[in-house]
Amino acid sequence: MKGLENAIRNLNSLDRQMVPRASIWAVNRVAQKAVSVATRKVARETVAGDNQVRGLPLKLVR
Image (cartoon, rainbow, N blue to C red; front, side, top):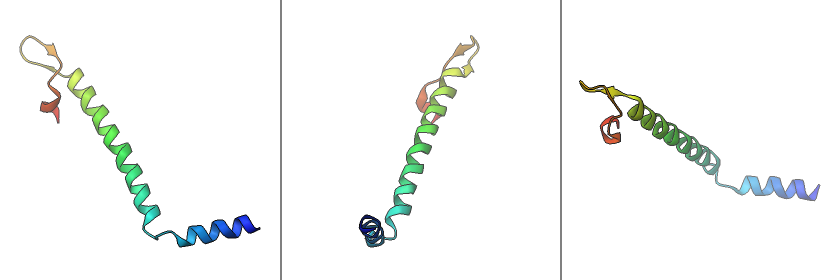
């Protein structure tokens, strides 16, 4: 029971904003990766121009 009480005391001593802030950071990290992967995929698969060349510059898609 000492370990449980110690864990509860430690959790209560944390800043109340720390856990929500950490979860926001995690969500933003995943979202940033998803946007990056999707942008690269669109740039690679887009067909543009009269000669039907595949691929666009990544900066153009961003």
